[in-house]
Image (cartoon, rainbow, N blue to C red; front, side, top):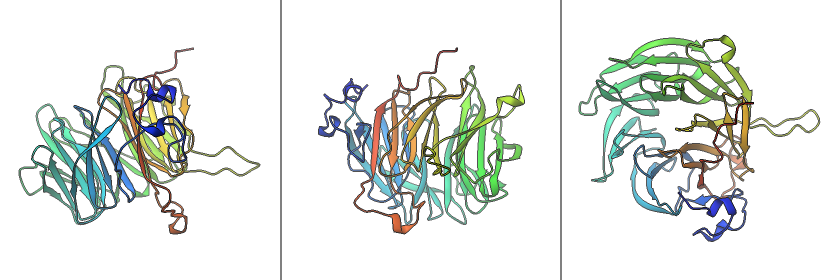
Length: 359
């Protein structure tokens, strides 16, 4: 997919492919008409090359990504307040959006209709579709310190779990769910038959976590998760480690040390490659990095964009890596520069994400 345009830096359909620019130093494919306000999440469909992005401008947008790398804006829906997250239905026909208006909406892309299907008492930070073996439902995590499970056809939640604190991040890969809350708490749920709490733990990271992503073992079963913190560090944690030393943390998204000073940035998102099991991290330093957790090595780091990278992901077959850059307000309003434009960028991922050969 995308031919060789980005690999060679030329021959692409976009004029900007040939030369590096501050907003796109890696010469990747730009998605047309990105949100003007800060981007909260970018997610590819599990079935086809459709991409959605949510934003603090209250909107969610959808594009079709063509094999050439060009993006075609398809549709848009809105909430009454900023949208903090989104997820796809397993069949790829619907998208769920989590908003500060305290609702989650279900957007049917075929009819372009969006209806509220979940409600909390505070902004909803996360939403995930659970496609189980005997049931399916929507999971929402909120700053009202609850985790709720919904049958989208009925107005009340099927199940509600109290969380120790506000929900900051979550991930689902049946039959596992992981939720990270304020105060460095992590709760693991098993989803077989019906959702149930499996384990509560304190984060292995000393600072507040911002993102979590589940990874699978060689048999394609979820076996652990990676957790990223605001202190430029990622933890790799197995739920049932064969050896306690299997769990480790590593530093990332930090500047090269000059003298005794090092700038440390937040890890904003983590995504695992669906085929190789290698991972991407993105940070407020404006860089993405690719890692092989099994070999504990870095595969690649990008040049720095002029804005923080806030979200990332892979398309359904792992051929395309998407990342979004916009101001994350980590340095306060005085560092907001409206002349720096938001971007959503696409790059071929298959070669970069291949694991290292075992030494």
